[in-house]
Image 1 (cartoon, rainbow, N blue to C red):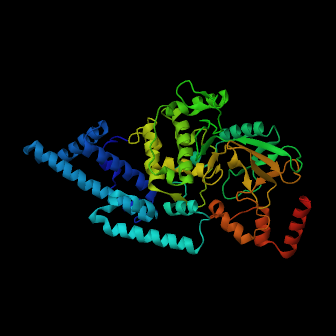
Image 2 (cartoon, helix red, strand yellow):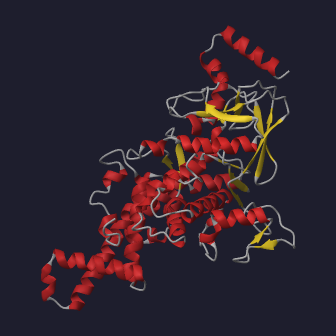
Image 3 (cartoon, rainbow, N blue to C red):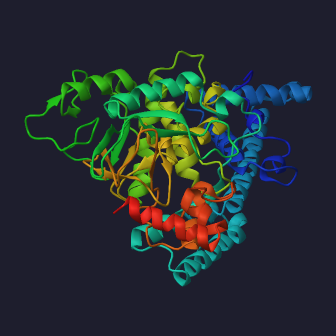
Length: 488
């Protein structure tokens, strides 16, 4: 960007374009631009930092050039005008941010913001409070959330459609051949040669639907592979290894650069070579992050991933092509994805600032790039709700079937073992279930639970769902008999 400190660069003359009034609408991107404008205005008004001085200078110069009669007036008068103009601009920016929160139904964010308490925003504040009460009542009536933590998490989140942005190149929307080859090599190692990656039998509208296939016959109960997580986050981190989060004893060693404790030399090497160098000595402050377990876990997985990308950054490459995320596939089925102002805008930009990225000048880390990275991560994490999350490097290659032939077993927070649930023939595609054991679950219920993965692309296309939705009575009878025989 030519003038990254120019506040007007981040405040479009027609925010309605982003909000959907004059086009498809990208309120999530509008939030990112407005947040950076907010940071510049706040810094300019404080005048106590290098960023503030830069922003104030650029804004004042633009005002001066727009009206050269300021040259005939006193410096004090001009300064008062600039401060007054910046305060009005700050109000305008907050008006747009609040509108974004409303459009994305981030009602909790709106109620919590101190800026919402001013007299001029009382009507907005009461609208957000009323909307939050109605949302809570709807959740209660429909029994959404099985415990207090789940209810709180659902209340705290708004929703934004997960979708590819129209300006993304084809290389950003599909896996490159070299990326697939890297994943295939990793899979061969993890499975000791029992599996390979190839084009899936579930070919849909996308040309790069891959799957995992058996390279030899496998017996029921046999270990197929063990996958190690690329990143791990625990809600309770005390006495845990920095890298893998395994429990530590008193004799655990520390990294050579700091006092962070580590369980092994391999974990130390991995931390230092992939992400810790840019994190070492940094204190990340995420207010309210402890309010919900999954909220904290999501933020920490994102931080670890962004740190890996930044540490390997050569100043040129697009972050979307970094090995940490280049093979991960997002869920672009136009399903609503949880969104909050702090977790999706405030915290990520704060992370990047702390990691040494100029969030105003380096548009390789623009909001749409971050949103794409986070969508990829979200679709490829597993763990215990509210307690742990792990980013599985190959989870995205394992396709779903409502009649799986392989199941996952959590060994610890870092490792997942996959076992065959029945005899598997050489060349057969391996499937897991994204939603657990659905053996006795009706078709309609399965589709509802799977909508976050398949909504917008015709629903689940596994053999069982194809039979249940379109098969004749005789075809269903034959299919289920064969299925029962396979598991006998």
